[in-house]
Image (cartoon, rainbow, N blue to C red; front, side):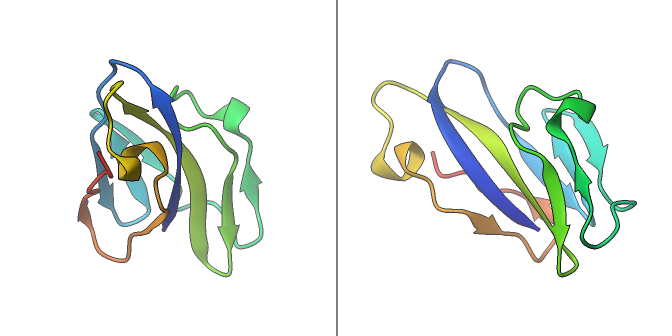
Length: 96
């Protein structure tokens, strides 16, 4: 799963866990396992303020962009985050 980030200055908190092809974002599950290869799930069809792009499956891999809140004095890594390629399940270590 390829997770891109769109940084934003905000006081909101974000916690993400990956289990298979499901992301748990702040306690709410989003299962993308039914998305066929080459298919796109429009962001408008996803009820999550943190998912800010369509969700695509490209060559078998889920790709999406998630809003990354950060503080006013955030690190360079939080303000200009690199994508994360999650191959294992577990907590997503956010660049904050």
